[in-house]
Structure formats: C-alpha cells, structure tokens
Length: 208
Image 1 (cartoon, one colour):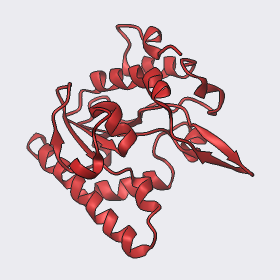
Image 2: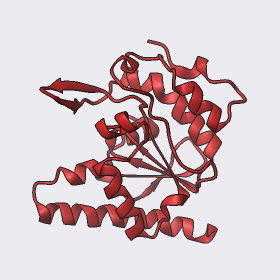
Image 3: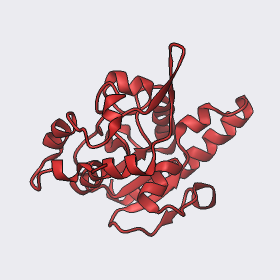
C-alpha cells in the first residue's frame, strides 16, 4: 500500500488540496466510503481538532463532525469558550471504514497502514492552516500524531511535546461520551471534556 504523498503538489492550497483528495485511491478505504471527507473550517483557524475518521453521517454528507458527535463537540466548544468559527475540524483518515450489520454500517478502526496512507493529507492540512493549537480527539488521532506509545488516559488535557510547532493536546473523542453507560457518566465525561477544552481556550486567549 502506498501513501497519498505522491498526489499532493508542493504548491497546493487548502482548497485545491480538498479537490485533489476527492479522488484519492491511496488505500482500499476509498472502495468502502461514499466519498472523501476532507477537513473543514477557516484556513486561518487558531485551533485544529483532529478525530479518527468520518462516521456514517459524515460519509453521506461529505463533511466532518456533522453527526451526533459533532453536535456534542459544538456544545463542548461553546461551553469551553471557543468560537466554533475559529476551529478547523478534520480526521486522520478521510474515508469511512465500516462493516455491514443488517441495514446499519458499523464503524471499524483503521489499521496502521491505512492511517499511514492517509497521513500526508493531514500533515499538509496542519502545514497550511498553521493553527496555534492542535487537539487530538481520541486515541487513534493522538497516537497518529503524538506517537504509538501515547496514552490519552495518562496525558489528556495537557500540552505535550511533539515534532511540530503548534501546541498539541489530546482528549477523548466526543463519540466516547455518547457511548457512556448512563446519564450520570455521560454528564461527568462531558464536564471532563469541556475542562480539557478550557485548557485550549486559555492558551488561545492572548491571541484574541
């Protein structure tokens, strides 16, 4: 399996990158997904939020974070004091990986090879947007960007060192909050998620 690196011109803009990614066949996931789901948001965004991959709703709509997890993310950003219009949202993998279960399409975790194949798109997004903070949502995004040994449970809500210039922080993926066992757990996990995002808001405050 190759990677998307050979598809990306050196002078590509964010808009042209989105257009090129629409026909990406760097890994077999393009055969499953309805379409490429590229990142979305202002090219001058101060914060970039990176998830694992698009879900069922996102695959159909062609936009990231428009399903239930996206609605919860919007609510958490507002509660943390981060303007959603200041954020660029994207995923490590740009196609929805799923398995059939009757009429439903069930999410499957992408493999290391699939992540590596898609990674050049994300690398260029980070380079072009040049946010002040990159937030990894969930273990897959965190390990893709911060290293295979990174554990969200140990280091969530803290800025960590990595190979790039923007500040980097990891927290849970909002979909994990939706899967909480009961309302009390869901409320507690949402509060912890908002607390992590407030760390980001505090770091962004001087630039506002």
